[in-house]
Every structure is written in C-alpha cells, then in structure tokens.
Image 1 (spheres, rainbow, N blue to C red):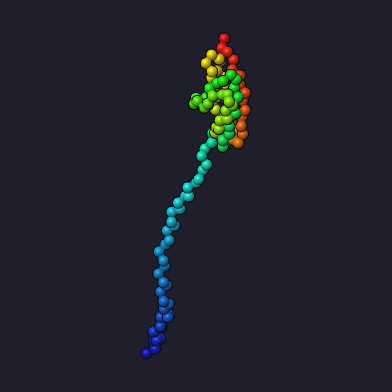
Image 2: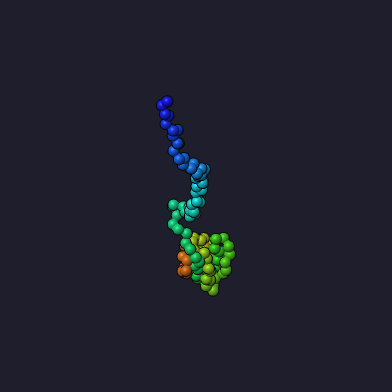
Length: 121
C-alpha cells in the first residue's frame, strides 16, 4: 500500500497578541477664559489718574462750590484737593454776579485761579 505521508505538524503557534488597550478618548479641551481689559470708550481720552488741587483767590469774599458742594470761603485763599479730571467750579457772593465754569484738574498739579466778582447790574 502506498505509504501516506505522516500527518504534518501544524506550525508552532505564536502566543496570541496581548489585548489592545481601549481606545483613548480625547479629553474635552476647556478653553481658558480670556482675560480682557475693561472696555474703554473709544471717543474719550484715558481718564486722568491721581489727585490734584485747586488754589483759588477771590475778591471780594465768596463761597466756593465744587461739583455743587460747598468747599469753603475766600479770603483767605483756599487750596482744595480734588480728583484729577473735570469739575464744576462755582464762586458766589450775594449781590455780585456768580462765576460758574468747568475746570480741569491734572494729577499731581495745582490749578491756580484768581477771580474778581463784579456787581450785578
């Protein structure tokens, strides 16, 4: 009888590959908050910084008002500390024409004003 070849051996088996790790889900990226400077109005110059003063001499005597608040009487000369920026100055004496104007105070500086009130007509 014809001889049959011996059964072939299966090739040596390789160990099964290790199980693959589960797919990594990308963590959601949280946008970092954007820090923005407060919006500045485009049509205004930067706000003045600091404090300045108004030195006021007035003849005859008068009551001094800054932004509607009584701040003293002259004479003697008054030195009034104010925040830098725009303020309304009023100088009043009954029987005389009052003075009302807008003044600009610069930080670190003293604005000097000499005022002479005149009689009403």
